[in-house]
Image 1: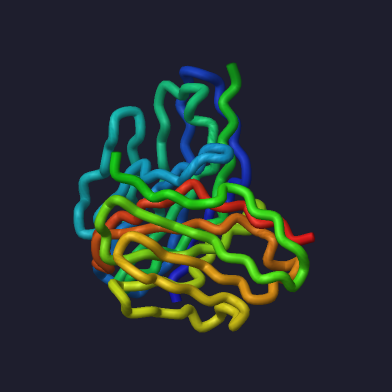
Image 2: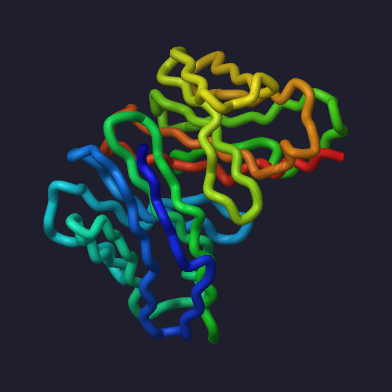
Length: 113
Length: 114
């Protein structure tokens, strides 16, 4: 069975600062993808960034980057130069072999002005 | 813009009164999913369609049914809503069921059961 664990229910960051959201996962599959989704209040969930497990290079997307540690089964999200619009619930997810996403329980990010 | 649309955004129903939630997509994706998300919890997959092929999760209650009359539309029917069914219901699509395929989510329908 696959699991995704987000150990930080809530995080706060000052505007313009950097924050890292943690995610660990467990899978026996060798081919899988990892995702970070953002769910702003009352708005739809959107993809922030994704990482292919067979790629060693960490994915980046503008101010968002990941630290993918395959051996440790860790997939953290770093948000640089935090903006008020980054305030949201962030979900880490894994997908392997089948259609199914396994989501973590989420981290609520607050951005302080 | 291509997108996933859910109607209504907010639905109130009475205990035991059937309710239908609607999802449509302009992405022309083959796969459509329904998730249930309760407050402060991860989305939980209820079922999905690959084209017209319906796939039910093992732990989805019989109270939940789905229909996909065509590529663009998918419906979630709750036959006899209980208080425990109050949640946000998310529709999502993906081009295929491949491991690399991203899911695109609608804004959700928040269901209240009185």
